[in-house]
Length: 350
Image 1 (cartoon, one colour):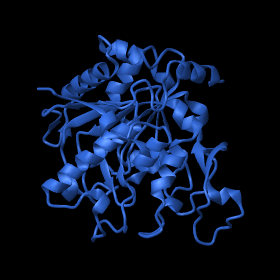
Image 2: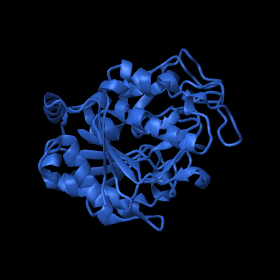
Image 3: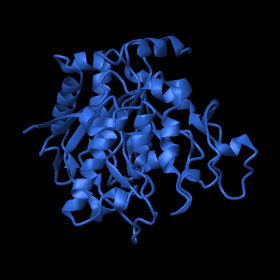
């Protein structure tokens, strides 16, 4: 199957990164989205419908999805399972995305749910969230320290950087490269990013940008090997700046129904709180700047330093949290970083 013509049509409509709505962030809060710690499907559906129509300006739910997706598209949904079952998205969010794609003419057989490690998807139970015909994909079965497996990765798409792990040969380009998953390069022509709002001890936050950079390529642990050997600040935007990312990631829905403000990327229960909010946008930089500020507000409430000024403790070991990856991504044209260019629309449903 050749996807290039569809990719070109997407680009002609201004889809991709930063997309048709640079700087625009829609935040939909619903106090009933969590009941007794469980996502409430009816409330999530309301949030999804309002978020998509507010983002696009479309008169109805199906029209909003039809502005980005069409029959003939193969759409992959990038999940964020690293936080484990206690801090990942939910079947109700995913099912609303399936329904929206169906409304736009994309059948279940043309939908893929994916992330980098298969065992993380299974641990979160995401294989049980799928409807018949929808595919589950992961380029790597389980985490390993070598991270140079190639079966699920495309040798023609990679980010090369003079950054290697101890004992590797800098002159060998394979060690300097992070190759993109075939799900991104070959299997889908449009991608929806579904990250969770989280703290990250080396990158500062892991939201839209990092869910792409570290969840879609191999050889990523070279970016944050030790608390002082940390290159996330430049590694993340360098990956997301690849043309295949700019072209194919057309929508970002940040799940902040539950979120974490410290101890990330894992979901430590003592640092999880419940903003009960979903964020919508096509601009990952604006979304991440907004999410970063939200996490900092929560940290201030509990008496913690802002992420950019935080220092190591017993659960977050890195010397500096490199939230600068968001500003660098803005400088690379991946979205709007300046507050005066970000239009945040906040809506509270009841």
